[in-house]
Length: 190
Image (cartoon, rainbow, N blue to C red; front, side, top):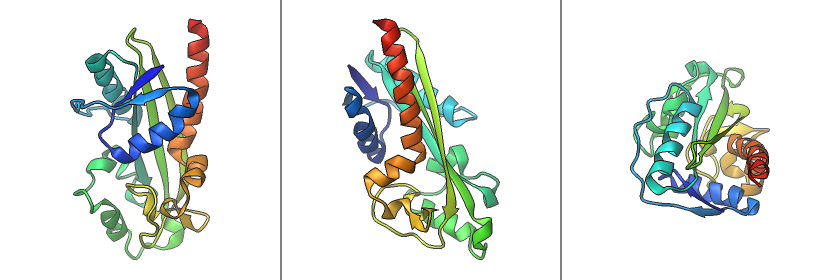
């Protein structure tokens, strides 16, 4: 089965392939237009992207909308995580906003909403969350986005291997649930 990935984020493409290919799904990318993300939730934005990619390619399309929610910042950057600051400055902006904030007030969580839209209009939705804290500085070279400032058990996602991160990350949890739902969906179609 072939699915198109509705993202221009190469970090997400790598993670999607790593998680979908073991399910027997051939992952393809395409030069897709970028629909305006007008949703009020991560899931609404994931649906907007998946639906647009499905209509554009005629293939089942998988999209994710994800972000970092920082308790001290009242949930920001949230659904605006990718647009929170200029590219390359997002992590630094979060760290600057938390300058002087003690460890016990640096709680945060990642959210990943995964949506798959099929050409017949059916859809599968799954959401995953993981909780941690914002580190005092950026650490680690692995991953992308906010990974090097999001900490669990004393290590940032940027310091973890792909396998460690996938086992505990928001996207890993969302894809585990997505895999269950996709298997159920495909069995119904047999």
